[in-house]
Length: 340
Image (cartoon, rainbow, N blue to C red; front, side, top):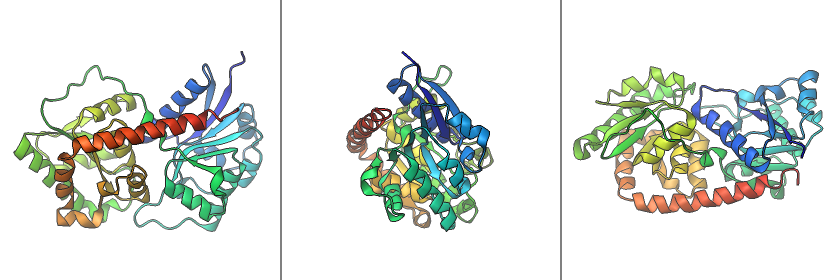
């Protein structure tokens, strides 16, 4: 049989473990749906400017997959309407999200209209959580066109690392967002102090080993400032990193995908919210209580929340398992509709 040709448009930042996890997970899903598929990767920037040559390359595919991840984001916008109009093959939007960081401006009319053009062009639209669906409906997209299917990285396969050994006993993972979020500066001392206080409590009371879960090279400039005694760095491939997440007892994360990978690995996670996406992911998995707001860090909320969550590990394991199974079902149903 003829092998299906797929054009996959996605975020190109290979240094960001979360973005990479999404790309790998989507590719694995597509290969399961279309064994032996020939996948050609395109950076999301391919839609920012009209380019006849790139448009021709996109139209050589049998289907065009856009996403997933936080691609409805001012950094990538606006998309070029002429480029979108020129897409002749079926367009599928898969597991995408809307991003707006603390302190960031709203999208401009031009940026929003370009999102609407893309979504209207698509034959299938799958978003990662309900907030993105509400955002699109507010822009005039019909409710029935949008499926909420979860983040593709939730289902990323895990690989056992060959050269990384975890300690015995209680293990807690930490992650900071230092990948370019301009708002980190004003909250810097509150964030570092809250993380340090929480880590030291579990070290002293339970002899916990604390791991730093690196997602972006920029974090090299901040995680040493935590000044946590015995802090161990985890910087592995995306699939290996997810395996490590599954071996931890608790994850405290800022980068959204530190929480997504923890959830996907069925490990309790606390989401330090610097963005709408953090809050909305917590709501999507029906655990809004797992969010700690930046303004609550000074009040000792992070340590208190960590203490609470650690007492409910079995509860979150069962709740995460049910939700992950539902995401798996929804994504399978969605991808099975491609080229049907």
